[in-house]
Length: 261
Image (cartoon, rainbow, N blue to C red; front, side):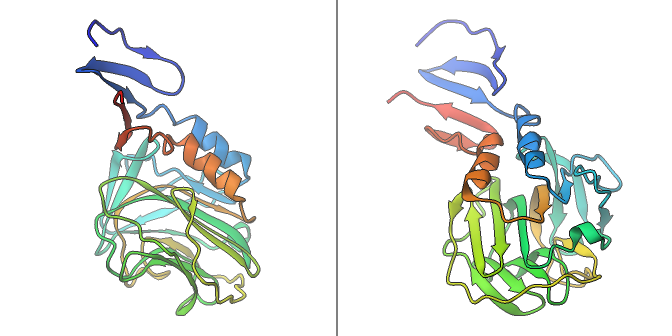
């Protein structure tokens, strides 16, 4: 295949190059409208896009649950959707004050995009404190939902790879019905149900609820919490809206390469 190419934008990406019979479609930043629209369609009680260049983190849900930075956080890294933050694994985390809207009890969805540096260590992703939800990496890289602080409910059947790519993580709970998704695939392990409750504890991303230990190291983007258990169809819709479903040949960060068979 030879010839010249004029870049075009069709709403899903920009056609950028053709060389040696390989077409590259860049999708970076093409999903900054469609993805938030899918999230907002499901009425999140908190939605932190983590787009900021400095300072605190706005809650885009409209509920006023703004987040505060702590410790080692790098702003403005390239995310799955627009920009993201990177937590350093030793001091960096984000906390959000307790609010009625975040007291979701035993029915909820927790969602984020991750680019972990390492996954084979205990590290927190979501923590709402005693007897509420906690989501963390296991020592082998799986995703565990617990009744905080120590009672396990379920561990994913597959791990999140530290492969330099962004991965979509979703945990849903509606009473005894629990699901875990990695990149829109249901990876729910055996469930030992516990009834989770609301409390007056702050919400924390990337460490234990009080910021004392179990720090996550890696990229964090598009964090959302819902007071409903999203269906797999809605989880998939979110994943595809980000560009995460573009895997026809091989996907690198925020781009799709189509190679003729």
